Image (cartoon, rainbow, N blue to C red; front, side):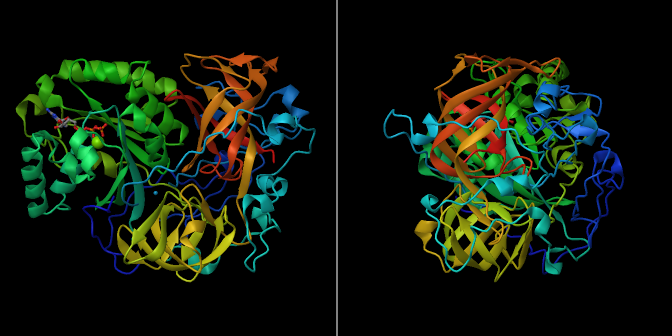
Length: 625
Ligand code: GTP
Ligand code: MG
């Protein structure tokens, strides 16, 4: 999909003074286990992590809820932080750290809210098993070994690059794996300009037909990102096709098939500026068939707009446990680490802007969102109508709504979101969302969000899994050329010195001395969702991690944890049912670029799907190969 609507300024070169905002989110104390430091800019903030000896909270690795230090299981999802039995195993814990001998010595990692820009994001291909035979990997599974406690960079020690993964040397010895602690950010990486607007990657998610694309298109239109001429064209063409109600959605749904079906299939990306943010809008597909595409796009999100259709029956279908995408999307974005959500209750015109309907949706959905681990304080509820332009970029004008609602309008709610934290203290990791063709970027270009580190024109990058070295030829952020991109930025990168066949969606650009692992055998800590079929040893799953997906098989169920005590309640159970927290091993049919969650959250969050439904969310606790 071509980048739409926005041709903003390059804020590396030319930026305005942005209104200062309060930022109590960045703390300067030991309570989170890390001290934070504002470098250079009041807008783009960089966190330099330092382990603290006594964290007061720990963040659950599954739902990222901040639990009190005294809790040994996550208050929200029941995932285990530490168990006495596990201590001897040297297992990693739910807060992303590793066991040492006593819970008090567990280090806590503060959540790094850094997440993604582009076009229609293509769906990375899935490779399926060629035969039903187990591979050598599947026949010989290592069990959890007795090992010394590891520090946060231990994942690098475990992983050696295999030549079978198709890595070439190209003058760089990336088999020599370095520890993150050996990495020192260079001075150019530190943001140095005050007033640069923070990029905010905002996913628009929700049940099919709730009005996500219409809302996105309307917003861009109101903010002047779609010209009158373009809008007129959409109106005219959609009318000819008998789909005039989709005119605004056509700004996002560009392909002939999407327009004909009236359904978004790939994530559309557009840009606009609010008072505080340079917003990258990721309009996700709501149809259940395209959840994998939604995962690939929305996994980059810093925050989300969850669009709800207020119409009678439509809201109810969205939260139905059997196939409601409001439900599935909410669970997914929570497991992506998104904790700030604007719930846009759309189509209020259809229910006559009824307060009762709004209240009833807030009540029912609020209960569900809390059960997913969202905190009330980080949710905002905005009644609106995308079609009738009520409550989007200015206060309500329809008296049926203004008589009972005086809260924020949508754009205001966007500006009220906390800014994401930028982490440049660890080496470059840029999961490739899409391999793109672009006149301005050259014949080989990729798009994606920097999970960590920084890039600039002329930087050498290691392209995984091919192992080739490439040079950054050009960079674009929000469709505008720029010279530097930092963690959290969603960029398009033109590469030179590499053949396009060696760059794939689902791959990762990394620092040449700090390669990402490439593996087919992983240990995962998972939380099962609403399962209709139990997960068994041998169950075939679709494994998703950042922008990669791969067919795989559950080869071991190591243990199930008791949700209340957090202790292993059963070792080696035969199957897993709904809402269980467990440690499993999966073997994939093809290698994926991966990091242990403790090393990089964005590259260590995994999702298992089967029969068109997400069956479990989890984290990579160990890379076993
Ligand atoms: P998918 O991407 O396929 O999940 O759909 P979507 O959520 O993007 O919905 P889309 O924007 O395509 O809109 C679906 C239908 O809802 C269209 O017919 C829109 O005109 C209609 N619609 C969207 N917003 C509103 C609204 O505020 N009021 C009314 N009455 N209809 C709306
Ligand atoms: Mg849509």
